[in-house]
Image 1 (cartoon, one colour):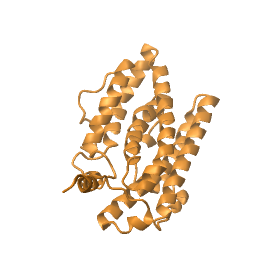
Image 2: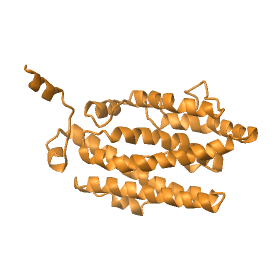
Image 3: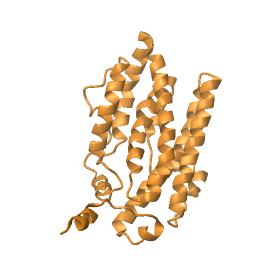
Image 4: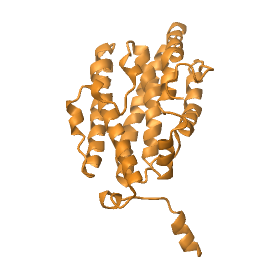
Length: 251
């Protein structure tokens, strides 16, 4: 085999749009649709979280403003994903009429139980941080409309994570505040964050990697993110739990 043929054979898969999409195997099509359904639902539910849950507990007008801005971005992300699906003949705008409890593709019960501003900070710093890591993978998707869609979403999500980090850092500025963050980290949010990546042995995650829709399996993505976030938590004087299985739902 000559060099040019070899290079072509090793080139990463790129599916430019709907016309090429429908020429792909059904396995690829199903994975793309499932990923986009989960993504769009998660973004819309994120908007509900900001307006229905976090806005009312915000301690001052500035934080309420931030919740409104984040919610608007989440709705925009939903629209972007919904339009990619619409180009494939799939309408998910019905989600707009659903109560968030009816949505099952991307459900994180711990978010619904947030009842303090400390938890709100951890939710964004490490929870939305984990989601950002996943979206950064999607920004390299073999399905080009997904990759294109994610460029602006990644930029917005960095702001979400930064807001959470700011809140956590403010609490950690005092021993009393740091103790509150530490208790929430150990009690719920460390295990919740780890679970966001899904089951370690998920066969679907391996298929996503096979087709270039993701870069890493669930466990690989989890370990990479932990290597990123653990030093940040320790820099704030927080201790990461030793047992990474306690309280987990998806091992």
